[in-house]
Image (cartoon, rainbow, N blue to C red):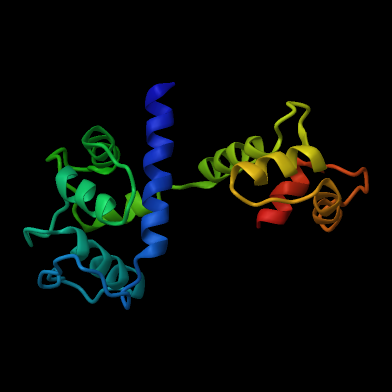
Length: 181
């Protein structure tokens, strides 16, 4: 159970990282020479090679757990060495403890449909405070308040109405999922 939670957490951190890093975005991280390719790269491979080069501090063409952790910390994420090691281990295809480009791409794509569904369920639970399987105006107000956004119950009712397909005054998980997509 703990290993599964760590794996999900790793993929969520990485998904956030890859969405934050674009090839055009300038960062303060060391960017070594690009990784040489034997065949012409696809656009996705070229983009991923550029992202990977931002991690590859020593320019060896592979990502170590320490390099992965350093990049995540530079982006403001709390990422322990154990989490970095678990993330690398989960995608390392040749067992050398490092990520090559293919491994790195697999890790970046790691958030599959099942994990997306789990992340949506986790987000739903943040707002569904009453444990009844739906988001009420009151639970939405409380959750938003914890996030620093003050709303009245009436304002929350209006927000819910926009996505309340069955017009029952609350958001089910399916309605929440449609709102998030």
